[in-house]
Image (cartoon, rainbow, N blue to C red; front, side, top):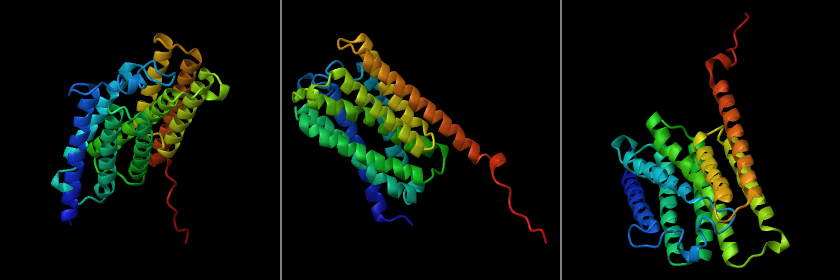
Length: 274
């Protein structure tokens, strides 16, 4: 049965979504703040490091925020108030929204070193939330879209953003790579991101949303390294290799999961021979 705690959870999720949307306006420069790409001395601009995606990549935030707002409204419905799955998902999603706003503020106030632990914590919270999505089942297609789909897109993109953020911080701090070339570091980080994408495909049995946002970010990273001011063919090629690996792993595992779930491939029930 629904309790007062459920009401509190619903309100917290809604207020967190509003906070994140306000933060996004500040981060875009629309509400008087400095656009993210210009904040912190331009450390997060599209050509600051070989790991930075080209500018259009960040338009995915519009889709993610739309999904988060849709979830915040959907979970307010009376039938979802006491739902056990929403009791598990509500606070982790709210925490991710608060951390999202905190990350924007840290960058806005030129606290780039602080932005690193914030985004790492955000990534950890999203991994936790994704795990809840994997271990519980949505009741409807709409829930699968606004909850599972949004969390998947959010997680995939934040994987790319975390790599870009850490690289930007190290570059701004004067890290010179222990004598290893910038291209080699870039290839290593990008391939590691690709490995994370494959791991998400394995753990998620071919979930599409994380793969989409990861491939989106890596695709714009490759585009930026070919057409931007900071050209790096090794980084571009590594990004394309990572995209192919993630896409193939997701497709193969998705088909395998659907095939195993098909009634035609279920083991026949045992029968008595007496």
